[in-house]
Length: 128
Image (tube, rainbow, N blue to C red; front, side, top):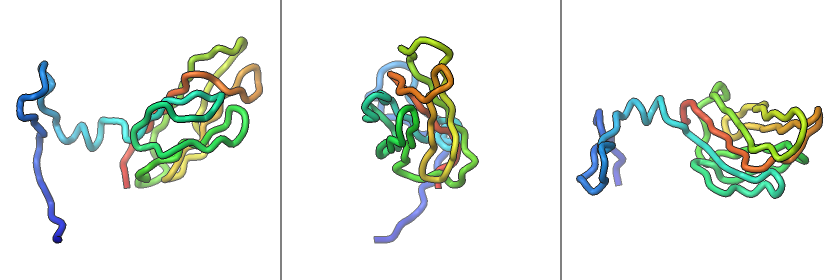
């Protein structure tokens, strides 16, 4: 079977979707939408829901790798993370150690790593 190319500028539905969002500019798909996202609980490092994420690697308390199903084209993508903080004190999340196949997330509370609830990570960039 030969592989070919399909060229188009807009995707449209056959009218089965209600509301006004029935078409989408392909530039948005290529450049504006998230290429990966996931929602997980830090306490058990289980992905609750995701797009383009195979699993998490639990590197210890508050330290996770989000592993992509389809790699990014390079390690210069944008990733952000946030969590519902049920821990008292100054808490923040940061992304660090970007590779084409994953990003490492750190959750910090009161100066130490901590597992946070309802963590969300989103990645924007170019897929390989």
